[in-house]
Image 1 (tube, rainbow, N blue to C red):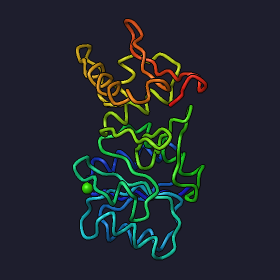
Image 2 (cartoon, rainbow, N blue to C red):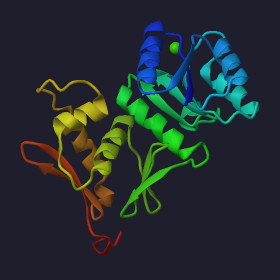
Image 3 (spheres, rainbow, N blue to C red):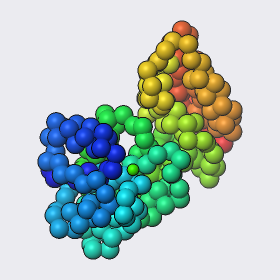
Length: 230
Ligand code: CA
């Protein structure tokens, strides 16, 4: 499986290159957009991990050029939080997925694996339970025709609970998955965000709710559909 990493921060490039090689990919690297584009067009890569802010040609343009040449390489874009714009959210440049820095390497691997499995054809993707639908690509939650408008963090928290619904999840685990920093034992940020999320889920309260699990954390619970009169 051939993979190209295009990233201008040398430390990040080295980290990615090493980690992905260890994960079994045959890794090539480029440290600017022009070099990356040339490599992508002259070689056949299965996957590409592409930074957005790059010298010479930015990631969006690299992506567009690759698609223009008819290359179907699966492309995952890396971006800083403040760089997220509509081009990423809509993946208008032809990318298949994106991740916001800083990210966990485990998640990057999981997403790349998913891209391999899926090929590039099956977007967009949805997860659905009891009529509650997550549009993973556009990071939206909806029920019937009602959209639940969530902030980025609220969405990540919702998705984390949703994916493991009916199971109790500890605050530490939630912190790790949603905030990606080690739990220091004092933060009540999880409780705070669960509070926000509960408020936003009020219109869906007959379908889905977040239960407090004493001394541990939280659990997302779906009510039987029959009860939901909407
Ligand atoms: Ca960069």
